[in-house]
Image 1 (cartoon, rainbow, N blue to C red):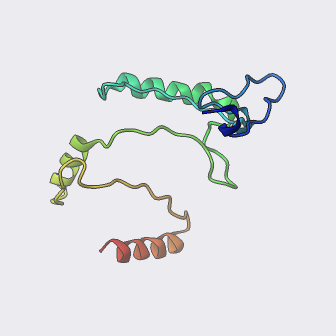
Image 2: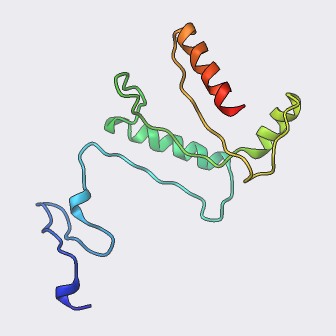
Length: 129
């Protein structure tokens, strides 16, 4: 690739390294706090969850408190699907559960108002049934 074929990269703002590889300083933003923790072999453990929660504690000064009432913005951790737990809960509830990887898990935040919540639950039931 010649110098003429390379995409234009703006100079780095003061205090940031220049664009290189996959890094481009144009994508730097204030008030962002991110922590990544992973077992690259996919091993599940309570220790890694505790460490992820510690990252949230450490990022509290950056807004990682999950408490912005006007936007719903906040922070949390992303976990593997707890298949063994769900298998046990579904067994107790007599609900068939497909094999791991054959289903999805979602989280919904419902309104606090009982009537609004009931309406949302009814709509959701109609969609999934």
